[in-house]
Length: 254
Image (cartoon, rainbow, N blue to C red):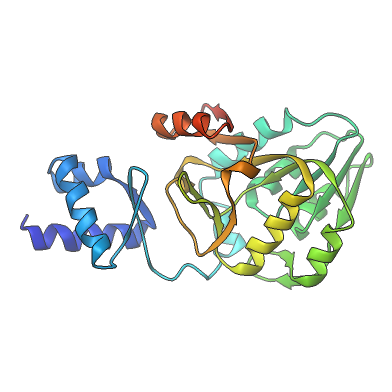
């Protein structure tokens, strides 16, 4: 493969996947990881991609939210197992918040019917909890976004200002070890930022595919996150980095 062909292939792969690791590119292109790193530096200098910890991410427009119906089936096994682990951190009479992620919906689906207060901006989460008699559900209200089935906007943020929770369980589109958490658009990012501000303990629910991704709108730095629940496909170096950031990682087996 000629150099120009390799560079074109790298950009194509990054844009198709959203993010990719150096080790994967090395195997696909059949060159050393050092060569791939030089290629990525060159492509970043040309504005064709962004370097990330251990790989590269796409610079394509990321403002559009992925429809809920698509997110529901993406990495479903990992999300279900992450949700099961998250539930083990909940105690009777906790006041918790669940965002509008599909992993939070899995939590709502699997939550036992125990005394809890659940604050959420998700229609799907609220509907899932309706039949659980001991769980009090508080919906934020706000502007309904059809693609994510979530409430966002000024009314949502004002509603969140009224409450304080013991634990927040949140996901996001991008998890970057240097740049923190990010979302597809500003309204989602602002809602999640407000949720974080009103929680004592924050659990990030993120399958391994989200690591190394930088989405459009910044949500939070790592100082605001206390726990990460992810799956065993995560790069071990990322676990070490989380430890350095004083974030407790819980890695589930698939």
